[in-house]
Amino acid sequence: MNAARPLTAPLFGKRIAHGFFGRAGGVSEGLYRGLNCGFGSGDEAEKVSANRARVAQVMDVTPDRLLTVFQTHSADVLTVTAPHELDNAPAADAMVTALPDIGLGILSADCAPVLFTDEAAGIIGAAHAGWKGAIGGVLENTVAAMVALGASAKAIRAAIGPTISQANYEVGAEFRERFIADDPATKTFFAASPKDGHFQFDLPGYCVSRLKAAGVAEICDIAQCTYADESKFYSYRRASHKREPDYGRNISVVVLRP
Image (cartoon, rainbow, N blue to C red; front, side, top):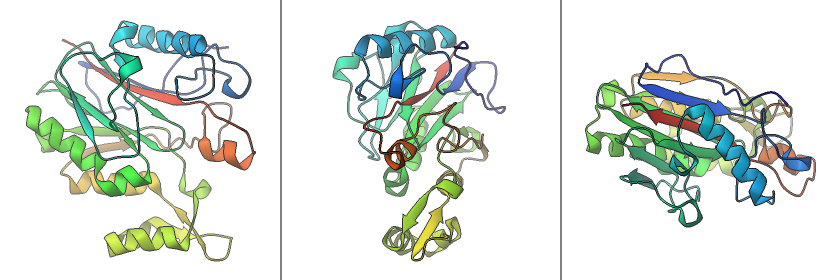
């Protein structure tokens, strides 16, 4: 298998190392074939550790400084002041830090991984934005946590990594009504579905709108669909549709250089 070569966004500066990793370059097999970085999957822990070590090497951090959290689809943000043990990871769906040479890692398998930087202030962040976290405010909370560390919202840049696309994200009418009840303007993120009474939801577009509302001026969506490309990415929804018993996790990482 090819080496782990992540996708990158064009808007981050020289002090920022980052990458959106998919399946390429890992040691996992079977359902998890590739670079599965999720200990929450049923994959062998040794293989997940080996995959994470490969990611850490690409990001030029030690494996113990590649941090992830116990993600629960919340709007909770962890301010990282020191590395934490992976087997005792705090529950949160975003992290921010001013510490250099720490990789903030977000796991995803259709939800939007969003990486943040204020390079001048030396502040970075990473968020896991599924629909629950996004409507709950995880992106705004990440911006606020960065500002609390000294960042400026106007100076923050955000990049949205591989995410399920609107064409592959079919939802029911009650899902759409929940969003419209929160904000009637969100109806623009729902398109008609071929299935009666259903809609296609634009999760990355919705995330962009929430980021803009939070004052983030520069936003990049790399526009890669996790569902559509099985050879490149893990996808929870695709695995469900194929009636597979489990699925791997993609990882997205951002690091501040000294």
